[in-house]
Picture 1 (cartoon, rainbow, N blue to C red):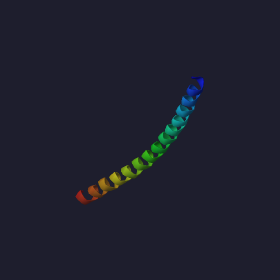
Picture 2 (cartoon, one colour; picture 1 turned 45 degrees about the vertical axis):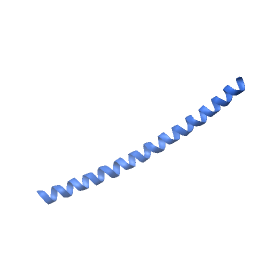
Picture 3 (cartoon, rainbow, N blue to C red; picture 1 turned 120 degrees about the vertical axis):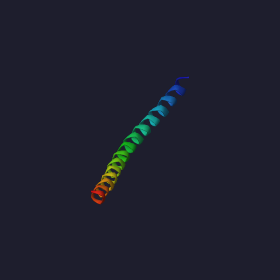
Picture 4 (tube, one colour; picture 1 turned 60 degrees about the vertical axis):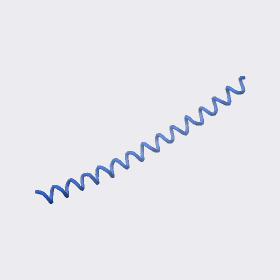
Length: 53
């Protein structure tokens, strides 16, 4: 019983560390994607503004 619980704890800790790493990874990727996206949108709006005004 106790050995099984220890195994479960270790497994949980591993998945927790993995999910935390994934969270950090996705957070960084999301930030970079947001910056690129906002730059693209800003560029498009800027072009639009120049072309129409």
